[in-house]
Image (cartoon, rainbow, N blue to C red):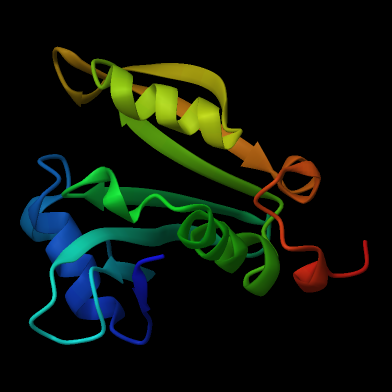
Length: 155
């Protein structure tokens, strides 16, 4: 399992934003982030960062954006950790992502995690780049292999 990095949200979010053309310098605004590195040292390679943003606690939704440099981060333990924050700690009822329509690998990955396609937002990222909206609901998370039973809250 990769080494998880917590309590470094501003730097991790800036790293992720710089690698997402539709985010860039504007950044994510208020957010939280978790990183996955190849080891515990500052000199170790950052493998992936997930940024949780656009949190609407009143309606229980949150968006997340994931950036990775390699697939080596995607161990079951890291995926469980990345999904436990929104569903267990923030107690959202819906986690959603906006994926560029031509990023077939990310769409397949999201489906493999249990996200379901909801919509296509035309010209969301630019005139020729649409967004595929995918989401996971809390009951889907709790029924998935990603949920750690000991972390589940009483429904």
